[in-house]
Length: 150
Image 1 (spheres, rainbow, N blue to C red):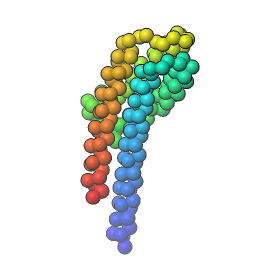
Image 2: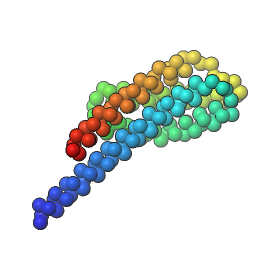
Image 3: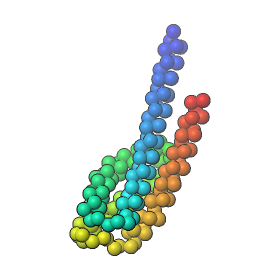
Image 4: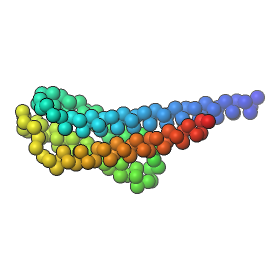
């Protein structure tokens, strides 16, 4: 009887842990989509300052949540002591800071497109790298999770 109860608790807690890992991985995929949203917003072809202000404001609000939650989610797929963990965390911070600068430029320039090419180049080079890293580590974690289940 005690053996069955302890086995039930083990299964319950491992199921909860796997479900939490799956949830964190899903959240990292949302961060990936969010980053791609930043990139498409700053690279918009048809310029409309009102729409641009709205999109950037929404992205900026979301940035606050992601900046605080991202390290916790990232720990699910990479060890916190890893240099990759530190670098991915740093890259997100730099991207979000650049988004804040872009938002500030939009506000300052009113109806004009921001022309700071360095910021745009940084976003266009950093976002794909971080997206690839997130995708890679999430896939590894997902494969590992599936191995443990089967």
